[in-house]
Amino acid sequence: MKSSLSHKFKAELPYYTILASFYVILTILTLSIPFFWDNIALISKPAQAFYEQHLQILLLPPEFNPIHPPFYAYYLAVIWTVFGKSLAAMHWAILPFLFGVALATLKIAFYFFPSSGRFWAGLFIIIQPGLLAQGIYAGSDLPYLCGIMFSLMGILTQKRYYLTFGLIFVLLTNLKGLIWLPILFVIDVLVRNYSNTQNYFSGFKSSLTKIYRAYLPGCILVVAWFVYQYLHLGYFIYPKHSHWSQGEGFFGNFSQMLRSLAVSGWRLLDNGHIIGWTILLFCLFIIRREKLPFTTAQSKLLLTLIVSAVLFPAALMLRDAPNMHRYFIPVYLLLWLAVLAFIEVLQPITQKIVVILSLAALLSGHWWVYPYPIANSWDNTLATLPYFKLNAQADIVISNLNTSKKITVGTEFPLYAAPKYKDLTDLVVDGLMDIGEFSGKRDTVPYFLWSNVSNDFPPELHDSLSQYCNVLWQGQDGFIKMTLFECQ
Image 1 (spheres, rainbow, N blue to C red):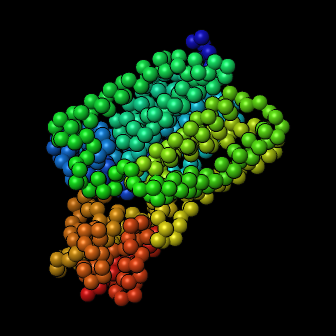
Image 2 (tube, one colour):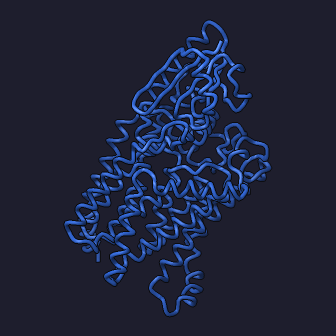
Image 3 (cartoon, rainbow, N blue to C red):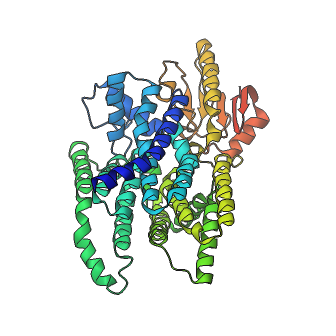
């Protein structure tokens, strides 16, 4: 038995080594990239609050409260305390979780696929647009994504300790973990009983009594956290009148729910993933036409994919908040694992063509950028990389304007964040104001900073600025555009 495990590990070790080496090199190349997008509010601000209080607090005031359990931000503050506060330390801190997502996905591939399928699975993981972008930008969702993939690995390989371990990260790092908890439970029950077609109902009842123990540690810990927060702050998630309550509420009207479902459908197809769904449907058509049996890998992966792709968007319908591409990374990874499982029904030459087409689709997905004012998930694409240089230049221009007189600059997310919370510098850029805090009209402030990265910047205001105001500074690099308007 021990010899068998040793042989198995030796066979898998080259894949782990290549994957780890890739992510270490990726981290080294991106050590200077600042906090970006939701990372500013969800990681940078709370982590700096913990750091400045010398790790002596766990509950944050509303202006720093990320609404999600703040344990990753606290972990980052510990890293800063030990190694010094820097962007490099921030990127190294996220590396174990990035590798954890890839490792768990690859372990699922090892469990189901022969050696050739494992190689392609590793390549698909590396170039997956959302995961690669999150790795470069040290995304706040990576600890939670790591937990989801470990949980799925535990379910699909029937190794319960992976599920228990993964659920702790799912529930204690992100509120979306509360959405994934019942989804994972449904997948667990269905996968456990998928072959028991004759006594499915009795098997279902038996499974409920056997599998719940793996869920207890994570559930107990997250309930304890929310109760602790309620006892000390008077609310479970966020204060009733906080800014989070305006964008993270539940139960919008019916039209909002339908729009959310449509956006989720768009997200599932976007960034090249439409090719994966097309390939999968074609393979299912072949299986039905030829009356071929499903393999274990095909059955379990397809079942897991369908449940995830249906229940997760359905749950997101209840949230009155944007649906970002990064939310769907677990579904994307499952999709491409399912594609690898099902292309076995194709002829060898066709399989090679399909794999090449899939790789091309995923690589192209990094540059599926829609023109302004269509909103993009800018933390899901490599096309965002020039933004950081342009934003730093704009900050310097605005800082220089402030030396001669006090100014106000109207702008939108994520441009109004102070350099302290983006790149951890002491550059003072006073006067940046969220357009939402005033009427947002051209004559309300003398300066406006616009970028196509600002999804919420009103297009009619941008048109007015372009027509009636002077361009004080302008920059463009690749897909990224940025303009500082003077309207005096």
